[in-house]
Amino acid sequence: MIIDIHRHLWSLFERFPRVADIAARAGNPMAKSERLPLVPDWEETGEKLIAEMDDSGVDISVIFMADYALRLGDGIFSAEGENRIHVELMRRYPDRLIAYFGIDPRRPGAADSLQRAVDEGGVRGLKMHPTVGYFPHDRVAYPLYEICQARGLPVTFHSGPMPSPLYSRFTEPFQFDDVAADFPDMNIVLAHSGQDHWPEALSVARSKPNVYLELSMWQPKWQYPDEFLFAIDRMRNTIGIERILWGSDFPGLRPYMSLKEWTDLFRRLPSLGEEYGYRFDDGDVDALLGGNSARLLDLT
Ligand SMILES: [Zn+2]
Image (cartoon, rainbow, N blue to C red; front, side, top):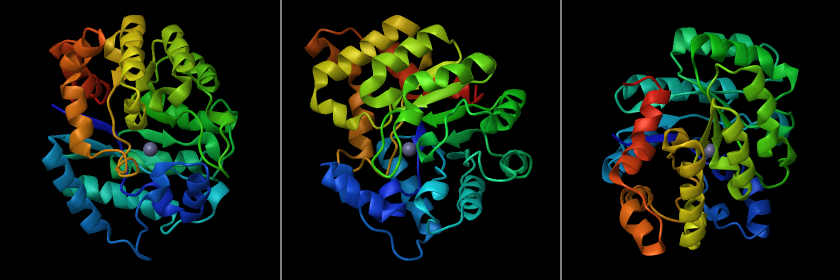
């Protein structure tokens, strides 16, 4: 089974074009993503998403939105409305899509909103994007973690830098260490494994058994296959294959490669590894592409 543990309906750059302009000036190829129509057709987006999964052999996608509004201004949909779209798509495709809830913990009533989304919407996890201006260990977020820990829901955090006007220091991998220590029974997924700061993310995961490293947004790293394979090999040898997760962070990463190419790259890990002197077997592939996420999501 192949599970994409990190997927969006629309990318940051689609939702907030002015951030795309800034990222383009920094030379980020992802900033070339398509612009959304004034009112995107979320039902059509859902249909296309399922078709793309079918084409790539992805069985299940975990979908969520990041709540950027307190830093970037209102998006096309309200945070409440956009979260509701995710829940509605999960209802429409119950065997294919799993929705998390995305919220800025500084919003008034954030914990109540999460509780409602879990009880009434059936969301299966929480997504947070601290680059909007809070530390993950800020006590304002703790009531949300209490809920996740009590309900056995994983929390996915963005980790690593982001374009202006977002702030990167809030998501340095070490900023998640306190949260992992204070909520030892809550599973924490460091999305993107800190990007270029992956050794720091790995050292956090090595000390905290409830921290998972996730490989979405690693498509650009394939420009340097040796480093890419070295990093995954080092992660596996340090914390075990069980805590490494595969994801796409699509659609934002599409300018680098298709979802099918990204999936195939991991399917071919044993032969690619051999080419560069790293040993991966089919068990590693199965664990990375879905087995580990199935366990995290309690699907087994
Ligand atoms: Zn993402």
